[in-house]
Length: 302
Image (cartoon, rainbow, N blue to C red; front, side, top):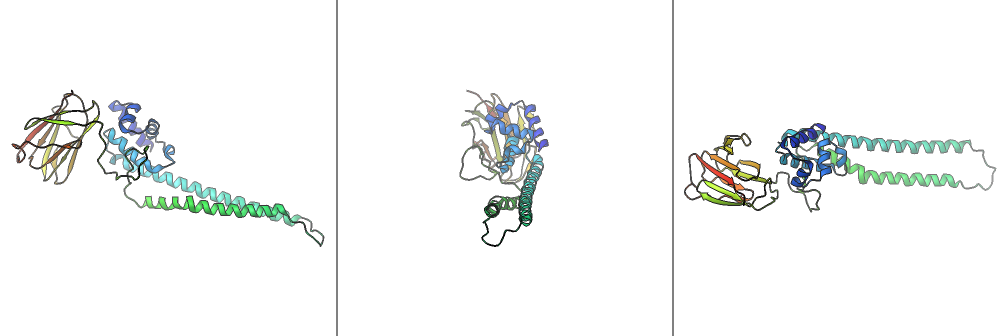
């Protein structure tokens, strides 16, 4: 986990964000972000299952591919579960040995006691108290095992058999009724984007907050070659290639005035483009375009 934390910190410093800025952007608290960058899993020991979600969301906010970090995250969590399980076993063993030693000592003391004369024998209340204490302690240990230890063992075995990790709510600091799927792309946006058609091939984007994240998605209805330009420069993220039918391409960027995003389609017909959650309705003159076409989206501040 130390390597994952170091990678997150290096990426944050490289893109020039402070912890305060990333906390405001991701809604993850500064202590949680700091713990992630330090690889400090003990910080999340109350519910370690939140860690994969935190790492995924933080990595996406820093424009990192979470799949390059997934293996290290999974391994670190499994090692922590194993360590916790070993600690519980060791504690139970120590408790059992302590009880056995007490019983042994009590028996030795009783055997060394001089026999009392025949007649009424005085009740040994100290021995009776010890027996009651041992019985209550054994009952408590059994309850603790079935309430806490056994569910942890079952949960650990279940996690070891899983190939993927279930994602958590988008903001685990808030109370929610259930956890969404980790592949759910519906991340809430800061502002309401407005898209205005200038002409058939040019659009202006307004209504954004400077430096907020804007998501442009393209859903392909057939195999289509696609290339993306940012301010006139071809980008490799996403890559220029032929995208397959039903594949979804994502472009994540920070909004700023005069930013220009150009989409170069091999053919346009029926391909669906959305900016945040707003679908672009193509002009009738190009809606069924079956050859190469470039469409530009320019951010215009108010």
